[in-house]
Amino acid sequence: RGHIFWDELFVFPFLNFRLPELTRALLRYRHRRLPQARRRAASLGMKGALFPWESGSDGREETPRASWNPHAGRWRQDFSSRQYHVNCAIAYNVWHYWQTTGDFGFLASYGAELLFEVARFAASIATYSPADDRYDIRGVMGPDEFHDGYPDQPGWGIDNSAYVNIMTAWTLARALEAHSLLGEHHGDHLWQGLQLSQAELEKWDHISRRLRLHFFPNGIIEQFEGYHELAELDWDDFARRHGDLKTLGMILEAEGDTPNRYQACKQADVLMLLYLFSPEELTELIHRLGYPFDPAIIPDMINFYMQRTSHGSSLSRVAHSWVLARTDRSRSWHLLCEALMNDIANKQGGSTSEGIHLGAMGGTLDILQRGYTGLNARQDMLWLNPMVPDELHCLDIDLRYRGQWLNLRVDPSEVTLRALPGGGKATSKVVIRDKTYELKPGGTITVPRNV
Image (tube, rainbow, N blue to C red; front, side):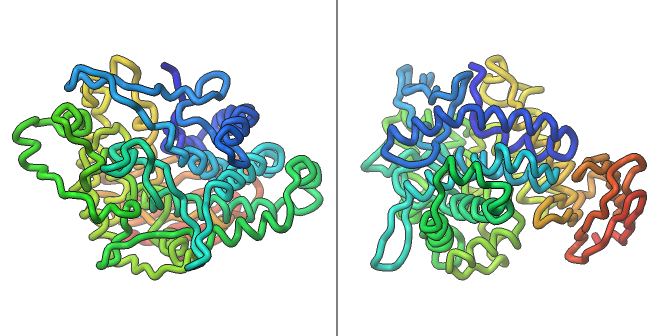
């Protein structure tokens, strides 16, 4: 149908380091559709802007109200438009474009307005509980499309999705940071147009520190409030009866059942947080919300959710390959190879004939570019933490960071980052395995690779 979902979240981080001009142009697609997003938020009684889950040429919500279930031979209601987390994906893309390129003009002219209007919606949808000084976000869907509600209330959304709440906290914090970066001089016209008040900014800060999360007794993040009460699915029995698990949700519905009853995921949900953030960043975000979190639980959390995932989305193996890159590189490589076959072998239930899966394609490339190198742009620094699987003897990549072309090479003995001739004139701060270096124009950094 030519619709745009949230798949840019898997594509833009790759483009930022190679074709940032393209990312900029595509982010302006979102900015040009702010009026429609504002109207959608207003139609729900909310402030700010709510972008559609499926966007087309004019920015309206294009998500169909029903989808065909071939296993049941009937139409079923589609509640995907409750995936308001598309807002946070746009905010993430804006911020990471800015961090990778240093394009202050874009931030001042377009990016900050997107961040502020998304933050306004987030603050509007969060409801305050004075009893424990916490905020709740209710009636939404996370990335896992198996759960559009609770077993007794299908279609009404779930409450306090860990992914939604943590991404919302991050988005609010970045909006505040953008406000501080722009200051009075650069943001005068924007502040006047948006009528941002100090009280509103203070509310953003409070919400960003007090959104509610739920955890299992062992410390694993619970996907959403009440997830632990759902039944376990007999995956072995289901596989024996039906073989392919990709259409698990539709098969359950055809049998008179619903995935809302089970601890089953169509794709990465909680684990998407580890796709978007390093363990250190995620831990910092959770601590900022006032919860204890030990990153040592992350391998157990990965295993817990992977055992309950059907990989019904082309994006699923991309995300899981990424999160396994730090704990099980061989398995990560295997999932990457499977993800590469999505369209080559038409692995997604025959859907390739309806259109190739560009999000998954971009994501597989980015596993090589950023996943296995630990490449990330944040806090005005370039971060590297290579963990290359044994199947890859060497990685040799050219990339752009803030106007400077760099060459990154990871071989069995060394990690080398070189500033190529003819690029920018600024010195870049580079963090390799938590040690900070300065990369000057034309300079080289070489460190031993610790496998």
